Length: 220
Image 1 (tube, rainbow, N blue to C red):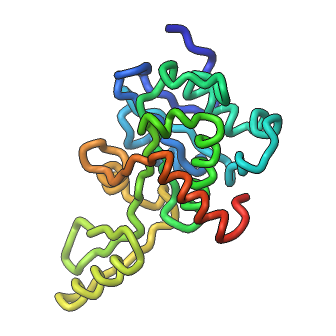
Image 2: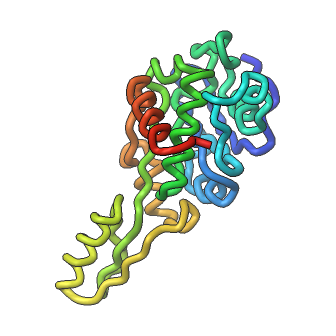
């Protein structure tokens, strides 16, 4: 199968097409993309960085969405077109994984991307081919330990630190983006299919997340 030329920012994988197991990680910015590219499996895992927060695809005009650099690059990477002509069977990847930084901006970016998929590629949601990756929030290193223990929320980080502190000194650290996460931790918790923390986003779940964000303020 012949595919059009890939976007320059895309760090593509070697295998593509339905049933290939290929995956596309969508991340925030070049630093995150570099970190993920270093630990991904280039045989079946591709990486595409965003530049800033995505456009609100539910409020913007069709022309503005179609001309947005990120959405153009994403549509070209995925294949299958977009909008009413989108063909899920023609996608180059089996899964699209939203891997954003572990902070409020990361959540915001994920929901903005779900807005795009809901409007322009809804059959990806219907087919269960979009997943959210939950990156770790921080880590705690106990005195004398070599491998840190990771937490996925602030309360979990505090609880873990308090528990280990009773056994001796600890160093707690909150991650400042994906690039700040140790490579082995990033691979195990976010990249490796057997151990990463992900969840499939259904169309109903995407709509609920969009409503929640919209009720809390403008989405971009």
